[in-house]
Length: 326
Ligand code: 2P0
Image (cartoon, rainbow, N blue to C red):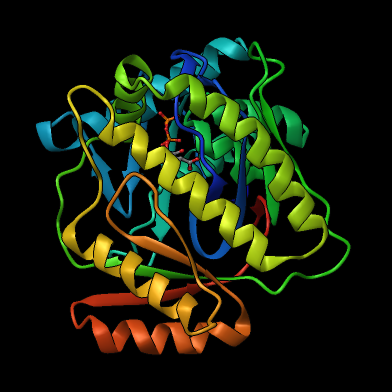
C-alpha cells in the first residue's frame, strides 16, 4: 500500500512572475517563499490497469465535462509528462483532497502539484531526492517546486530542467513571523497566474527592471532572514509584491487583481504602521491580502481589520513543514 503525500502551500515573499520557458516552467528570476502550516493537499496515487488516469478531487470524480476540463486536463498532461520523464506507461487513480479553510484565498496549485509529484514518487518508488522532487513538482506548477521544503525556501531559476529547483534556507532558530490572510468574500473572475505573467512579460515596459529588482531584493531579504529582522522582511516583501502588481497595471492591455477592498486593506496597513504596529502586505494573483505580522502585532492587526471591514474573513498561518508521507 502506498502512502499519502502531504504538501503545504507557500506564500512568496519575493514573487515568481514570468517564465523564460513555458513548457519547462523555467522562471526569469529566483523567488523566495515561506511554507505555511494551515493549508495543505493530501494525495494518494495507485497504479491501475486502465488506458487513462482516473482523478478524484475532494472525493468527486473529475471527468471531461466542460466544468472540469481545464483542471482535469492540466493534471492529465502533467501525468503524461511524468510518464515521459521516467519512461513508464502505467496510469493512475489519483485521490486528492485540499485542506484549505473555506475560501481562504490560497491557490492550491503549489500544494497540489507538490503532493502529486510526491505521491507518484511514492507509488512508483522512483526514490527521488528532494532536489529531484522539486524539479518534478516544478513541471506541474512553478510555485510547487518550493512546497517540497518547509520554512523559507529559494527557487533557483536555473537554465534548463536539471538546474531549476528549490532549496531550503537554513535558519538557526525560530523566527517570530506570522501570516494573517485577509479574505475578501467575493467570487472574482480572475486572470490565471499563467496568463497574467505571460501578458506582463510580453507587454509591460518595466519587465526588465523587475528582473534586476528581484536579484537585489532576494539578496536583501536573505540577509534580513539571517538576522531574523521581521520588519525588514516585511518591508522588502511588500515592496516586491507592489512591484509585481505594477507589472499587471503597466501591461498592455492593463489588468489588475486588486479589488476596492484590497486597496482599503493596504490603507489600513499604512495606518497600523503609523501607530507603530508591525504589519506588511503581500498579494498574489488575486484580491486577498496576506499580512506579515509578529506574534505581538497579530492580535492588534486582526482586531483593527475586523473592526474596519465587516465583510472579510481572517485566517492565521504560521511557518509550516515540507513534504510528508502519512
Ligand atoms: C508566486 N504566483 O511566486 C507567484 C506570485 C502568484 C503570484 O507562483 O504557471 O500557479 O503553474 O507555473 O505556480 C502562481 O503561479 O504558475 C504563483 P504556473 P503558478 O507564488
